[in-house]
Length: 198
Image (cartoon, rainbow, N blue to C red; front, side, top):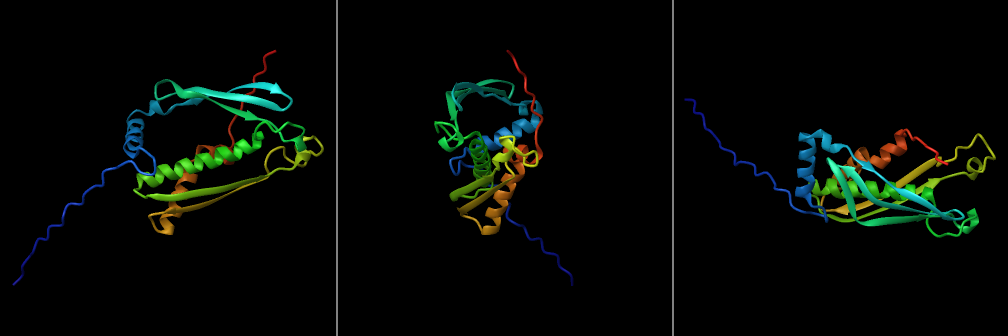
């Protein structure tokens, strides 16, 4: 005698996204869905306006950008001063441009980690990073055409702790690297057009 029993599995409840790690996860996921439905919303142009102040000291202002179908303004106009330290003939009124590049990489990867962890429901306890870049001044000073002007290598080390196994935390960092705009620009290059007006 054969009998067939039907076993009903309880319906799997889909976890509703909630704000996590300071990230408004519902808004993040809604934005991804909106861009998926209307790809034209994905086009953004960011801008920085710079002005020489004195010596090697300059100041950039970032106040607005375009994207998501319109123009947007930051809640305040952000400024960033760049200079060189005394040992490099500056007055140390701000980080060097190459230090800003390291900061941009660290900021982009860290933001990605926070967003990805939040979307995956992982609470972060801490995220720390150390980013270093090696540069040889022989290229910048025109003393060797065998040495590049920029970094010869960059190293980023992340220390991450959260409510997930180590393997999942590593996956989150790797996913951030895979989607990082700054990492992409640094590792794949980007066309740069320089226009000069006199």
